[in-house]
Length: 210
Image (cartoon, rainbow, N blue to C red; front, side):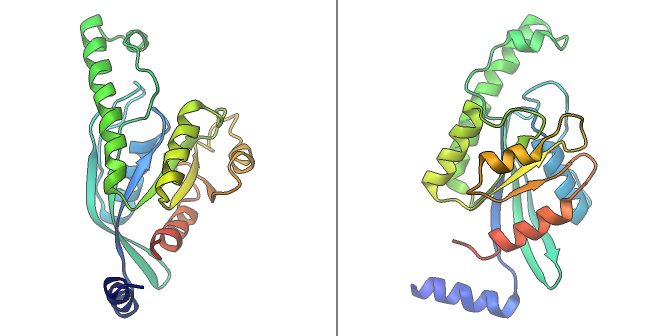
């Protein structure tokens, strides 16, 4: 252990807090901004961004800094980073179904593609990731596998949050069996169900560092 690591551990033992930047990643419409808003509202009384049923509502990085979350006596200071949805393909035709004009749809598709690139670049700037998956959908998608493989290659601490357990057809157990090497927390970011379990996992997983 280097001198800096020793100093960090000593300071942590005294002050009991660690400051980390946590990225929320996942495919479009998994509920990333809803989760970011839930965390920010629970601990800071503010929201991070606007939500919409239209895919790729979040097309730029959104942040909320210095949120203190607690689990008993332990606490963790986080900068939460809400990222644009990761997609392998962005087609402007998909947006036409939501009433957007062709011009608006093409503009959103361009911005969404730029957002995907920005989200991937931000992996260099985060120290942990909450990978959000829709528990009503098949977990074995190219996007989920690609993101998880990228996180594992970077050796970033990751928690998988199986979102939307409030909906019919939710099967968080499928995610747990699909990714047994990772901790999977079933939640409803919209209703706040099991958020206490996610906060406990965050303090435990991200509070100790690599």
